[in-house]
Amino acid sequence: MTATVLPDVHDVGAWTLIALNAVAGLWALAAHLRPALRGRPLWAVIIAGQLAAFVQAISGALLVTTEDRQLDDLHALYGFSALIAVGILYSYRTSPFARDKEYLLYGFGCLFIMGLGLRELVL
Image 1 (cartoon, helix red, strand yellow):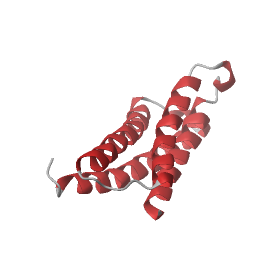
Image 2 (cartoon, one colour; image 1 turned 60 degrees about the horizontal axis):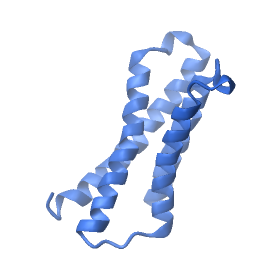
Image 3 (cartoon, helix red, strand yellow; image 1 turned 180 degrees about the vertical axis):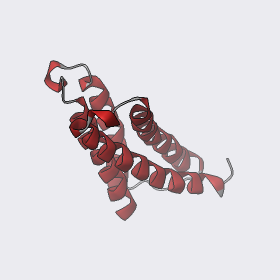
């Protein structure tokens, strides 16, 4: 990618991560209360929001390595914390602890990832 496209991809990706995880988090919390809101479309949005975290990490790493950008320590912390949060959410999906609470788990987890994305924009 050229020097002008990659920063734009990273910026648009940040807002995409925030929006997808906000929608997924609120939808999952609502689905906990109303089973009619559950289904494949919800899980598709959750997966898209979590994949956005990986896209952000990859585009950020490319920015640092190919364009000699300086990486703020807190920006890296929040970015990689989002990846760790995705892993934790995935690992708890079949836990006895999360039985009957998976929509709460993913609802709050997606909102947490959204918050990390918002925090990164403010840095």
